[in-house]
Structure formats: structure tokens, C-alpha cells
Amino acid sequence: MILEMKVPSPGESITEVEIAEWLVQDGDYVEKDQAIAEVDSDKATLELPAEESGTITLKAEEGDAVQVGAVVCLIDTSASKPEGTEPEVKEPPAPVAAAPVPVNTSNTTYASGAASPAAKKILAEKGIDTSAILGTGKDGRITKEDAVNAVPSMGQKVDVNGRGVKRSKLSMLRRKVAERLVSAKNETAMLTTFNEVDMSPIFELRKQYKETFKEKHGVGLGFMSFFTLAVVRALKLFPAVNSMIDGKEMISYDFCDISIAVSGPKGLMVPVIRNAENLSFRGVEAEVKRLAIRARDGQITVDEMTGGTFTISNGGVFGSMLSTPIINPPQSGILGMHNIIERPVALDGEVVIRPMMYVALSYDHRIIDGKESVGFLVAVKEALENPQEHLMGNSVKKALEL
Image: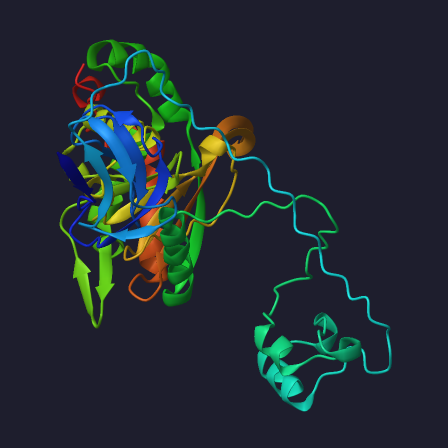
């Protein structure tokens, strides 16, 4: 019996996926539920498991874009499993030598680099100087075809000169992330405001309770729970930051679905902590750990990465001291965390050394005014510098469920 395997739907809004990589080869024997391919959608990378055991025949190539519901392979379920054969290991492709750079061997004359009238007009419209074009016409003249094919460059062209060059196709997920980031820059009135936070109170709480917290709850007491709950508090105080623009209307939410930007093997992932306003320190830490593991292992689903109302990005884990995070559309705000550095600060007329972190809020100025953005970031700062009062109700053990 020949079984047709079709692309399952990764989510309601997704109609097309891309075959990122076949994990088996044409003619291999596969077991039921064995991962046979990785497919990229515009929101996540998912594994495609074999529906039955048998010999597989591939019907799509790596890099092909296929519609949801399309047949991507056939499985002959009547085939018996070969005995004493090892699964064939997919060898990496041999490096391909860089193509030689064409050299214009024609004699240089007064006409070299001169553009025809039609070519000159096209280049002027594109804003390209004739000196940047290598003409293919007689004696190096620039033809109309040269002008049509010319692409404006943001900088000088790299001189390869026989050196190795690798060209690889961007995954569908990477292309979608790129489109969204460019869209956020071009379609929003994005501004960023900064502040700094004295992390000493959080350091003291973690030093005192982190071992007990981990023993009882099975998760560590990290910084993310403090920041998430501080953001939830600030969103309640400044609801405009928890809003979005939809055409000529503003949509405000009375719940807080916090997106957490994490780095996965396939690029940037933004899983969502649902209803963070109802979670405790334990609940936030458990959810962050669960989502981070699923993102790292490539098991995150589309539903787990859509629908956030605000984003927290922690560039500090990579050593970033200061940055301007880009809004995750259609959201209107994103908080950037950074690394913690001991710095001298003035406190009560004295210079003391404190663990300090810069924080940044990028926001859409179309619906969030300066007063609200600055007030929001100050509220986050207040909560982090006095968590016992603002986040724990002056009862640390009760808040940590100890």
C-alpha cells in the first residue's frame, strides 16, 4: 500500500511551508513517528514525522515551498524492513569552488564606461553612477541591458578576487523575521527611552531564597520573574503601553500576554507567557523554563508564539550593555534588559559600588506619549529596586510560596 504524506497545517493563518531539510534520503526505510523532515513556516520550524513504517519516496526538494495539504513524500507500507543495514548518514555537500570573476579583456578606449543615451537615463533614475557599472558592450560601453540589470548598492562592491564565498538561502522563518523588523522600523513612530536599575535588592533576595526556592519548586529564582511581574505592574499603571493600533482604532487589553524573546537554533523565537498577571514568581519561572526548552529543542508551536501584547528582550545574556530593541509588531512596546555591571553610584552623598543594569523601552509614539513611556519605565525601575513592597506585598515567603 502506498501512503501519501501531506503537509499538515501548522496554524490557521499559514498556507505554505518550506522544506528546510530532509532527515532521510530517497529510498530509505523509515519507522512510524520517525522525524523525516524539518519544515519552516513563517512563524516556526516544525518536524514532520512519518505516519507509517515503510520505504520512503521523496516528492519535494529541500528549499521547495509547498502548500499545506500538498503531498511531499510517499511511503510504501508493504515494504519489509531490511535486516543488518545501518541507516545511511547524510554526508555534507562538498564545497563548491567560487565561480571565476569575469574580467573585461577588451582594450580600454575613450568609449570604455560610456553609457548609451537609454542606459544613461535608466541609471539616472536609479541614482547609480556610470563608474560603478562594468559595461558589456563593445570596448566596455554600458548598454541599456547593463543599466536595467544594475542594482543600487548600499556600499562598495566586495572584491572577491578568487576568495571563497558561500551563498545560502534564508529560511522562511528568518525571512519573515526580517520582514517584520523592517516593517516595524518603517511603519511605526518608534522611539526609545532609557533608565538604569540598581539590582542590589534582587541580588539580596536571590542570595537568601534561591536555594530554598529551587528545592521546593524545581526551578531557579531568576531575574525574568522579577522583570515580568514588574512589567505586568507597569502595564496596569499605564494601559496605553498594553495597546495596539488597528487601522483607525486603538485596541487595549485588560490582560498581559508577555512575549519573551529567546535565541533558538533556527533564529529568534518569541514564545508567549499567557495571562502573566495571574502568575506568581514560581509560575513565571516554570513557564519561562518550559518555553525556553521547547524553543531551544525546536518543539515550539505556532500557537505558543502568537498573540503577545508586550515583549521583553534580554540582550544581557550575550553581554549587551545598551541597545535599542525593535518593537515586535503589532505590539506597541518592548523592554530591553542588559548585562549587570558593578559601577560606582552616588547614594546619600557617598560613592558606593552597586550592580547596575541599563533598561530600554522602545515604544510606538503614535499611541504612547512621552509621559506614559517614561512613567512606564520608571514604574519598572521602582518595582525592581523595591520588589518586597511593589511585587511581594511586603511578604517575601508568601510571594515565593515558601
